[in-house]
Length: 390
Image (cartoon, rainbow, N blue to C red):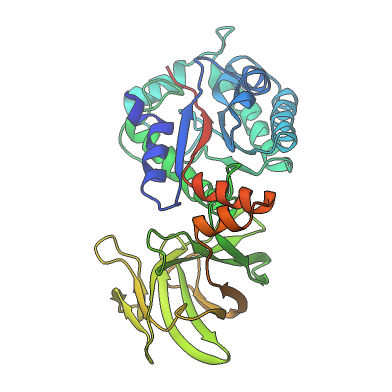
């Protein structure tokens, strides 16, 4: 494989396609044959010095081949997650697929891998399937991590070749794993938008939460930095605070008002749950929405071809703009709901101070820090991903 077609490589590509308003760097810190003992030492002694924001652990096969007990593996995972909390980075632990340990229809070659694969003491690995099941059970009980994933079934619907031995997989397999992680990684980045010491100029407002099927749902409204001083960029995202993941296939009913005067009442659909649109303020009596509409939801949709634009009196004058949001679909485009409403947020638009005014007229430490935040608003954020690779 190439660097670009590893799990970290594919994840980097998926992240680069998203508009997070800052750069994200995925570092492949995998070591051949690494197990949870190796990873714990690597993180504590080396990776922490790189100030990571998120570490993703892709584990299972090497611990099983080393005959590590479920208790030992669980303790290592918990230590990694506790270390992450103590050093201010998120941790995702995943349990990887192994040929013969899931429900994938194996090719003849993959079946041979499953039947002949051995641990480090030359015993058949398939005989340890019950131990691997206990790995999964223990993983589900861990609460110290930002997120845990049992992805043993990631290839169950694949009929073609994926494995090129009992644990290593092809480029296609790497792509599938990266995509299975991407939604959660996106939501963590969106939630923890201030990954760097130097925060970007975002105005972020969380609405009050609401519950759906015993899940706490939160909607976040963000005012993102724009390249043009007069124009604005709004980002609205939905987060499942119970399962610590982003919500997908969201239809938003968005109402924007100022001084109790309705400015916008419109439906928007976001497949990944993240709605972003540009606002072009101007003095007028009407709001115009430009973009593609989807007939099924009668909603404007995110499109690479036609970006969503809102033109009119929104943000054209100083003051408080109220955002009232209802969710009409979540999880599945056909899952219509009418109980998720009352998400309310406000954005205060004030006259901005120029760099010159800030630096000359007010030399307080607060203003100096504000200036530095503006200067360093473009930064890179490392995400460390430990992957088993050859």
